[in-house]
Length: 384
Image 1 (cartoon, rainbow, N blue to C red):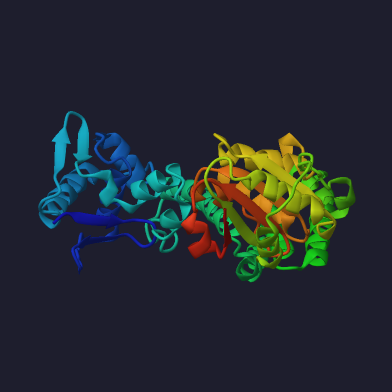
Image 2 (cartoon, rainbow, N blue to C red; image 1 turned 180 degrees about the horizontal axis):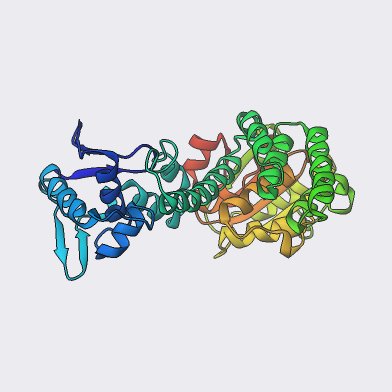
């Protein structure tokens, strides 16, 4: 059994379910410095400067040696090794929540990373070095929280995020990424006027306090709300000529819900059926139609193409895939559009392209049955 070190909050060390007593705050500060630079030699002068804030007392080195001895006893099984010029704590970085947090963020798993945060990092440890470290980590935690929010927006959690994001924007009123997230949540929750009002408030505050205009991403989001008639794409290929038959299948499409799959072997007319039905019902979707042949396509590329088609300039597209999917769904939130996804390989290729609103209609064609769309997303199957 190994020790688990938690510093993203009040520092604590656990061995299984038991808390390990590592002594008073100064001794804990020594351990914290070693944890931050785990598996690296930390020089004695650096330790003294970090723990005693560049003003170590005359007997600091003697105190440090005493602390190391006590920590070795308390952490029996987790070695603190004396090396030339300093000390190193040798353990798996994954046993330290700080390093696990950073690893999860790097892997694009902000939800798991944020679950490790229990409060103010290194709470109760004093000095300039710990204050600077807390400031750095506050920025990292904020960025991870924003990434997690993008993922939640991409999953359609607009309504549940409105109150939370409203509170956070009151704390950071000039954070444009946070403002964008609140606007997208409001749009997805059917509160378009409130989203426009928030943009106006932010624009005025930026001008008054910083002499700046909102950035391109926020301006494009605002434009998507105020200039929607300019961005009503009509991407359907030409309707198939001499289309006949398939009366039952057309009737099934008429009765299907927001998502429908048309599946069957090659040559059974899946695309012809989808396009014929789409052209027949295009007028039911006044905000436009999106179409893509997914054969071999990366859904992330398709999302970016759809965002552009919906009126966002390339420099207004966020770099993170979760944020792109969230923006795509935000742009669709108060629109009534038809989306035809042709030649899907599997469910995973389709899910990022699904809108977060039942106002839109999605028609998917595939040689596969796509059971994941049926069970997890309520798609109605039409089998040829």
